[in-house]
Length: 195
Image (tube, rainbow, N blue to C red):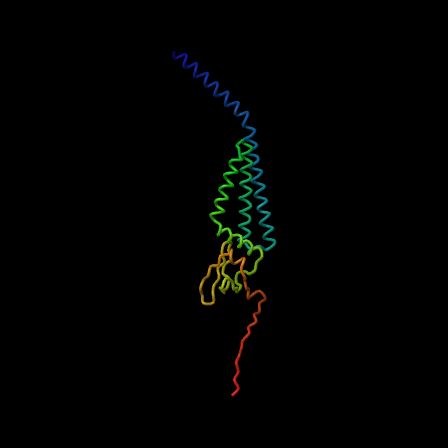
């Protein structure tokens, strides 16, 4: 009885060892290929995002825009790299991509207003209708620009109030920049009385 159990355990161990050897022969090239794809892809992503940052610096883009665009590019390329690695291993990525698209759609719908502010902020950082320190009038507010961010712009009014303007409506509305040319024309109407 004990010999029979010992023989069954030995046979089972031999079977498991042979199965592990077959799996190693089958999956080792895929795993090595996936590791190589990840390493080469990570190196390419690092070089590409550095080149984009240098190009934006050369063209004098806003630092917050440079950081944002560089990290956005790095994130998107990393997701694509991980999909390529998973596919090399043998995982089915169509369902994963569908889930990723659904999550992106849900997040986009939830952040509808924020996405408009974000898009407006990117457009204003690209086209620069004003810069920090300029005196502007927009959305019935007038003040000096303290900070220009991705989602909103902060101005300081003449009566020392801090006003936060969302970039979505700001980018599609009328902006009067009083300091673009350095000189302001002021018309003063004077009444004179002759006695």
